[in-house]
Image (cartoon, rainbow, N blue to C red):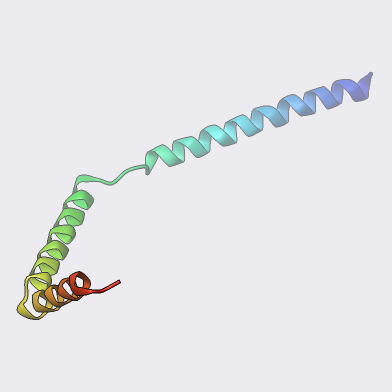
Length: 79
């Protein structure tokens, strides 16, 4: 009987400990779950900068001529 009671108590304590560890892990995750406003601002600035550079590259004469050549060769291809 003593061993059964001891096993039951150990299961209860281990279960409570696991629940507390899960709850603490959830708190840690929620505490650092998102970005702050300054990080959003820096992300937007970086994305806009990348978009501007990409736009300039794609609309340059060399890249535009190459893209037109690729499309022309694809349309002229014989099957």
